[in-house]
Structures are given as C-alpha cells and as structure tokens.
Image 1 (spheres, rainbow, N blue to C red):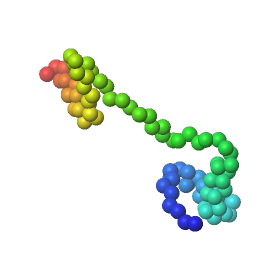
Image 2: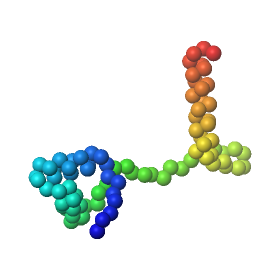
Image 3: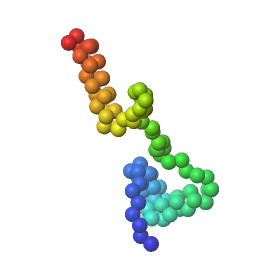
Image 4: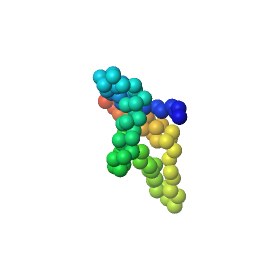
Length: 90
C-alpha cells in the first residue's frame, strides 16, 4: 500500500544513510523502523507537545474579560514600543 508521510528531514536522511550503508532500499529500512517502534510497546513522546493555553482574564468591576490573541499581541507590542521610547530617552 502506498501512503505519503511528512517526516522530519533529519529522520529521512538518517534512514537513507542506513539504507545505503546496508545496501537496502529506503522502503525496507522505513518498514523495519516503523515495525520495531510499534512492537516496542512504548508510547513515543511527540517532538512538540501541545498544551492548551488559557488567555489571561482580568477582573474589571463585575465583568471578567478574556482577551483574544490579537488583542494580547497588540498590548504587548504597545508595551515594547513604550519601553523602547523610555530607553532611548524620548
């Protein structure tokens, strides 16, 4: 069965080197590596862990406001501009 995988370049390069050094096809090395991983029974930790991030909530009287990412970006940018102006003596 044919399928397309988006793999990290380093991983593919390493498999190609292994295949060439052993005189094997990349397909065979990839199959072996995948089978070995599946048979190990150990869960593989993803390269990047995604954690849910909660936006800050500020109490303002009775209402609590939740900021959007764009609003937070704008607030942080304004703060950086202010810091820059203070540092340069403007």
